[in-house]
Length: 193
Image (cartoon, rainbow, N blue to C red):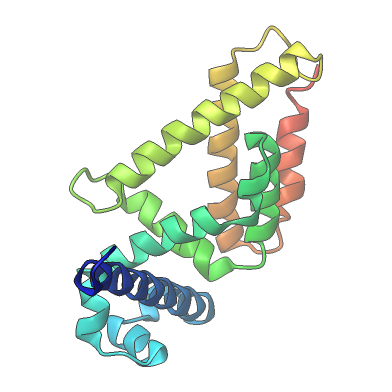
């Protein structure tokens, strides 16, 4: 039989997990409405109905909060259910067009992550590696079934497509008249067999 003392940490852990998720959801909403430069930890705390120290219990710094928000969004993105990375990327680009301020957070942190000391450095390094691996596999599948030119180097195509996606996002943040999904699909079409 499990004693009440043994179950307490689990309950506290579940409550902490729920509170953490609530903080991230509130932060996502505030960033989507106001943009990350205009969102403070105190604003997140107020909107979540908790104290600033309670937010800092889960997220040491504002950068930590925003980095975890990026991870949270990636983990909970609807396109995660799409097994083909290239198809998932097309879907994600289309979805991004409805969340410009969240795209700006991503672009800002991706740029600042070039500094190995930035908290987002490891996240973006690992994320890019995983995306390149997934895109490479998607290209190889398309080459095998005749949808992409078999003479192309899959890793190179994967890097080009990831660069096109990131570049389109940055360009779109400056000029929202660009249709990112259409432009990205046009880039993919250039590699078809």
